[in-house]
Amino acid sequence: MLSLFRTNHLLLGVLILGYALLLHLACFWETPTPLPDAPGIANGWLQVLFNERLSWHLPTTLLLLFLQALLVNSVFFHHRMISPVNLFPGVFLVLVSSALPEFLVLSPYHFANLFLLLAIRSYLKAFRVSSAADLLFNAGFWMGIAALFVPTYLFFILGFALMLPVLKSGKVRDQLILLIGTTFPIYLASIYYFWVDGFSSFWDQQWGDAFSIPQFMEWDKVSYFGLLFMSILLLIVLFSQRIYRMKTKMEVQVKLNIFYWLLLASGISVLFTMPWNMQHWLAAAPLMGVFLSMNFTKMRPATAEAWHLLLLAFIFLFQFGGRLGLTFL
Image (cartoon, rainbow, N blue to C red; front, side, top):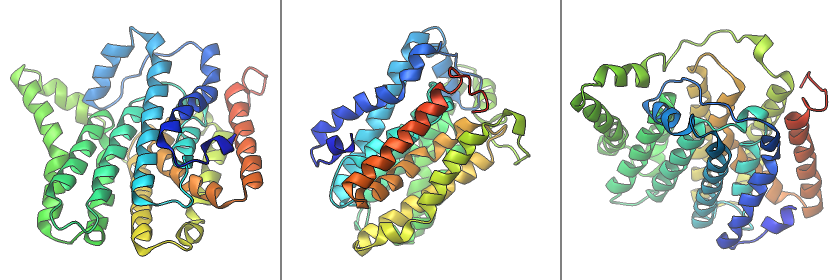
């Protein structure tokens, strides 16, 4: 199956939509659930739009994952971050973002991840560009919109800010532009709600219970095998840094470091999002997916196909295990 995606033609990325549908087959046997209450003013908008239209959930989720895949592939193509060039980054983004049953339902994380990738695209374009105020502002702007869906995505700005001296410069002006871009969409939303006399409801929805002190998990509500599966994927990514950097230019290594810092930021964002549940892994899923794509690119084709089929087997086991009577999954 992976042989279909060993191409440098972005237009063939439309095949990823079919791949996403394959990974969401379990949804055809499940009734979509309404979006739950969660911090983020945009989550309130999603509830109004989708909770009365449950049939929209699956097509919207597939479309968002497809757009994320196209975005990440365009980033890797433009910056030559993978060799040989292929569609694997988008493929494995979709795979990791669909790995567990908790990931299959429509979530604010799907929307936030789309804007996260838009921010990454603008941010990387600023690499050693003398005048990049517009790119940095746009990166911050997209992250500000992402924070309207998942407020803790503001922690991603730490990753962007820490790597800015390496990406471009350590000037305070550049950091300030990034910060202004981030606050701008949040400021516009607050002004609108103030104008319609709804500022207090905006504040409660956007920031009420948005950041919580880390606490112990309720282990009886955690899928142990799902947690183990995602933890193993994360460990593979963390211990493969040498493989990713092998025979790559310094420019590519810098950009890979940015992805690692953003992966760390995703962990911090999850740490302060309580109560914790498996769906929070979606904050790290796009970043884990693009790193795993590099592992599979560097494998021999036959080996990559075998490991990919094994991953698919585990994923379908998680998704259909309940129907097979495997309740411990």
